[in-house]
Length: 472
Image 1 (cartoon, one colour):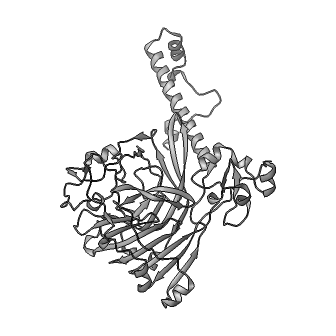
Image 2 (tube, rainbow, N blue to C red):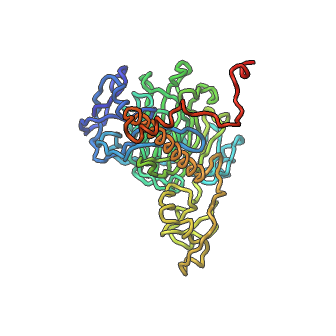
């Protein structure tokens, strides 16, 4: 595969056996289009990877509205790329690894752990623990494991991302995910659309920062999938802004039951000292939904972040473990009666054979099916099938994120319409004046002569000011 890389690429590492050569371009997640990314890179390197049969959808012309609430993607219809647009190195054989079980009170007592913090969120419960013995139970040494793989392209790159297919379905905020995009910036992207602003939302970030893996031969990205869990390690990651501080080594593990583990082996400086000028610095999770709209015949995709989990940077140090336990969501309920029961953190509704609270990745379909009006809200309706017009859940709130504002979107569209109308009227007026001036014999020309500016005068009885009066 011809991977477009930086000109200062390193010595090629050993690769897996039984591979074939293909060619492709590799997407970046910086603020430029896919074609621009290819043109800005110098040099070509051939790396052997397994041949791919899957295809990817690449979204173009990304417009960023960066903030805590919303990111916007303004693009043309999706363009289907070649099979190599997003590449991955497959693990040659199944992996047998025993991942640590969930933490219990007995576990904490046996390890004599006193520095522990538990938080309750809407979608996840989290535990932050600083203990060496427990860290060793959760840390998976991919560097020396025979079944782990090194991602050659990412290990020689800066601000790049590549997608790998999972061998299991991973529930993320209740949605079943079949693939994840690994980024050199210390995070995983789990969105459906591959665009330039992967770091904005829909991520799992053990430590998102401006890491550059092209500066050191000792910097690598390892990964391993054993069909029940995926582990990704960012080994000796160098900060591009502070290369002299040393390498960061940390990892994340995604379990098939939805649980997530962050483990930090080496942090040479405190996280709060990492510069966020050129790249966001985050620890946590985020998810969003996409609304597809057409404004003035232009297809526009807007990404709304509906929830985020963030961790205090001061609580993360060497040999720290963060465990996120997935909580039950509406999406996991498959029938009406179980959906309506109030046994989760959400008020779930049944509509169109699907359980939802109206705020998830399927919100576009929720609007399309008019579920705000047709949703079933109690168990009696499940048997009778009678719908009700329940009040919309406009007061839904989540941690440090606001839900979609229809009023703001509507007013924005109205403002755009009036601006376009005013500009059109001005252009038409100028065209008419030019036509009348060049054709004085026409009716328009005669009207312009009759009402030319030097014939305009003040009406009688109206106060007029002379230059002397004005400049007294």
